[in-house]
Amino acid sequence: MANTNRPFGFRKVGSLSGSPISGAIQKFYTNDSTAFYVGDTVMTEGTYGQVNADDMPRPAVVKAANGSVVLGVVVGFEILPASPTLRYHTSSTAQYVFVDVDPMDLYEVQGDSTVWTSDDIGTNAAITVSTGSTTTGLSNAVITSPSESASASVLIVGMSPDPSNEMGAYCRFLVKMNLNQYANGALGIE
Image (cartoon, rainbow, N blue to C red; front, side):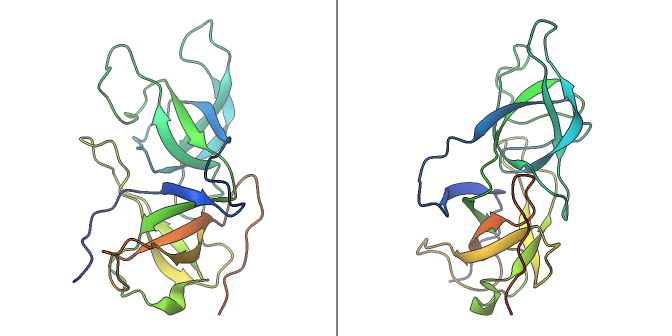
């Protein structure tokens, strides 16, 4: 049975430290001109911001492209009073975003249409960033281009154990961020 092409971005499944619970969810500010979604990677912008004048200023984040040194993965957004059902960040909207910043966390992510093999486990891979779902609020990010390059965004540490997952196109993998603002990059293996 072939895998279904149904991307969801990066979904936390554990940690290399063995801890199933992360205490590394932090609140950031965004007013990014690009929409982003739960499961997208973000990076710090180098500025601070606040939604309300009396709020404590917070570091600003923007959606991270492939090859960026990421801060972490978006896990949620603070509700906007004017749009209480909105599940994602619309472009140029001042909003607070919750980000998993633990560089040891493991994520499940779908591969692209590449015919993935077990030889790809242990290599690094690039992230393909695209527009997410405005209905579900989930990212459509996938991984692609397995390589040994230390400049690739993620390290593939295994295959998702889901029984419906099989090696090949759209296979789901377990990965860790290779380029993280809180950790050093690692070389992929041959």
